[in-house]
Length: 333
Figure 1 (cartoon, rainbow, N blue to C red):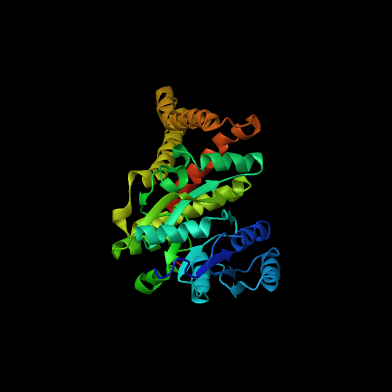
Figure 2: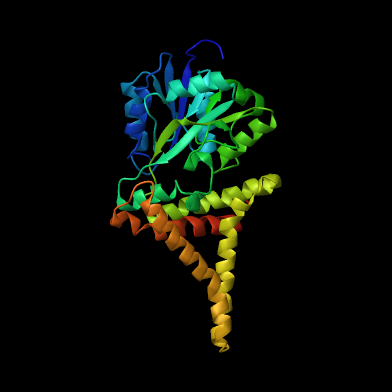
């Protein structure tokens, strides 16, 4: 990478982000970085004032530009922003993500020091309401999301994928842009191509991004249903990437559904032992959920009761929605 402070483009795909967009943009504009930074916002067909807010920010700041993303699909917006970019380093930031002031400088230095093609850090979920705070705590626990370093932390080093991503521009010339057929998990798929091409994806806890969780159970269910559906698509396209961690949620859904059906059959036929056997799987999940919720509420810092009481619901929504989504998969268009 030439120079100590190469020009950087921050790309930001947004859809219905009126609430968080001004703060997200402000954090980009206030970076402690000696080089040039431009921000390209790809705006989808929002139902709120996202476009008006984005255009207002662009008119106030010369380094901010707005491009259209009529489809509203994230990978298409990302590619549109990349096509309009000029920086040697491309950094993805979402409209509901808040980056610290040293984020760009740390990302560029890490790219230079490691020789990586993409670097990323921790998705530091931070909620405002009690429900959002419960989601934030669940998203940083192994019971909630598994052991991915960008969720739960860990030592820096090579990784399968990272949150958001800070890329060398040459990456997109070598392996292409984001796969526009992947409505979700497009970052995972791109990182897979980077690794298959011999490139390095690097995780560092020095990069930490504040993430605003979904604010309701319905919104959270939709989010994790989509996560599951598109992770199933990645598994279909790349079977070797399947692991026990990704099968845990769908197997839980299958086990609980079969258990309930078995219990109903036992009740209809007067077989109490069959009812007990059928309810074993659902009860086992409920107990595991409650135990994990108690432990999660206590560490790393004790949660208020108003937040802790929501953890079992949050875990159930995340697990069951992801599992159902994985089982359902992506329907052909």
